[in-house]
Structures are given as C-alpha cells and as structure tokens.
Image 1 (cartoon, rainbow, N blue to C red):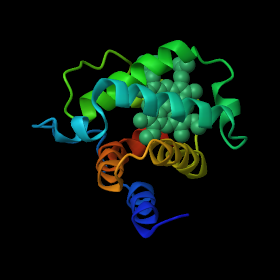
Image 2: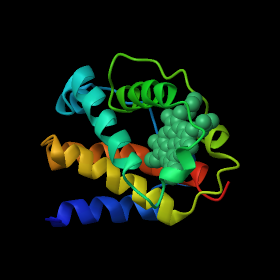
Image 3: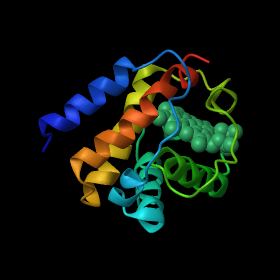
Length: 145
Ligand code: HEM
C-alpha cells in the first residue's frame, strides 16, 4: 500500500529542501495539468480537508478555523504552486501558522492526508511528488511557530 516513491516524497518533505519559505516561481503549467487543472485541484483539496477532519492527530487544530476560507486559499495556493492561472490571496505561511505551535508530527500527518487524497484520486505519483516538493520549503515557516 505504500510504494517507495510515496515514502521518498514524505522523507524529502520532512527533511525540508530549503531554509527559506518559498521557491522560484513555476514557469510552466505541466504540473497544474497533471493534477487535473482547476477541478482536479478542487477535488484534491476537498479530499485533504475530509482526511484532516478524520485525523485525530491534527483535527483539533482546525476547531476555530473558517473551513470555507481555508478551502479557497488552499485551492489558490496549489494552483499557483503548480503553475496554474491563479493568484494566492491568503496570508503568508508564517503568519497563518504562528501561535499554532505545530510539530513535525503534525506537519507529516497533514502531508500524509494530502498524499492519501491524491492517491484516492489516482493522481500520478510523479505529479504527487512534484506538488509535495513545492510545499516542502514551506515547512520551516509552518512548524514551531
Ligand atoms: C505543507 C503544509 C501546509 C500548507 C501548504 C498549509 C497551507 C495553509 C493555507 C494556504 C492556509 C490559509 C491561510 C489564510 O487563511 O490566509 C492555512 C491555514 C491554516 N493551517 Fe495550514 N498549511 C500547512 C500545514 C498545516 C498543518 C500541519 C496544520 C495543523 C496540523 C495547519 C493548520 C492550519 C490552520 C489551523 C489554519 C487556519 C489558521 C486560521 O484560521 O487563521 N496547517 N494553511
């Protein structure tokens, strides 16, 4: 059930690829297309939020969260990070996670929920890993804040 590429993706993500909070802008929309475009990303985020709601490790952190807003901001973010025709209008990763005191275990749990959502939608593993690699550098902005 856990093919090697998925484990490698999580490992890469948990090690973090960079100390800074962002990577270079994407120059093509091949990842956006591989994720299924706007409707594909909407389904991935929906699956992620459902998995979070069912995950006792992290669901408590979202008790006070406006889920409609989070849904919209995540869709925008995944769209931008995959090279899609969107703009991210949310708060910075540092601002939105400060005060939550998130741990590596929390971060890894959310990543697992995202992987499970993409796997359930048959997103190709290469596309899964490309999205995870875009999100990995955000880790240091999100945990222990
Ligand atoms: C790769 C990892 C993550 C990404 C890409 C991410 C992305 C985001 C985005 C885009 C927002 C919306 C910001 C806004 O409202 O303007 C947000 C908010 C939030 N995130 Fe994360 N997040 C990540 C990890 C986590 C983890 C691990 C947790 C907790 C277990 C978490 C909990 C929250 C909460 C509770 C909010 C809402 C904060 C509020 O209501 O003000 N996030 N995140």
